[in-house]
Length: 205
Image (cartoon, rainbow, N blue to C red; front, side, top):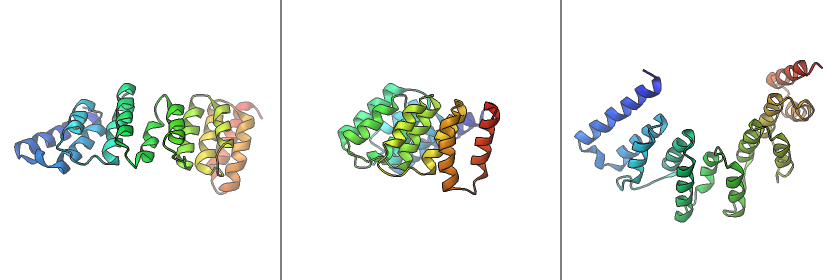
């Protein structure tokens, strides 16, 4: 039996036990079981608990868990429905949720909405996520432009994903620029030297 299947069986057993003991009336118990189902990828049961009124307070962890489960299984329509539901509720911690939403296929849509609709200024972590996703998709030029447009100085969390993307797509010239930034910021990190050296080896330099 797969580890994830074992965990799901454990969550189901816990859920069944809570029903027998009448503990399912407690919001805190349902909350914990919901997160357990979400982490195991059991979206149907997680969503059923999420929609029940027995979870009286849906906080950022609850929302992240249910949306993250849908992201993991590629259920984009449900992600958009939940996202729009959050917009209607005007939840004041929606900025934290963008770290989950930025892993969706329509990453640029959410990044744009984050700034233009909600007035949430992306931080280093949000930009790093964008650079990583764009880089993995081979859109390195777009990732570089995004870095140039940042309203503050990018740190290692941004340059690191760019360097990795350059290695993945053999963009040696841009890799040199990214590596230079990284080596200046963290000269003690041998991993950056190794990554650049491997790129040179592949490029025959």
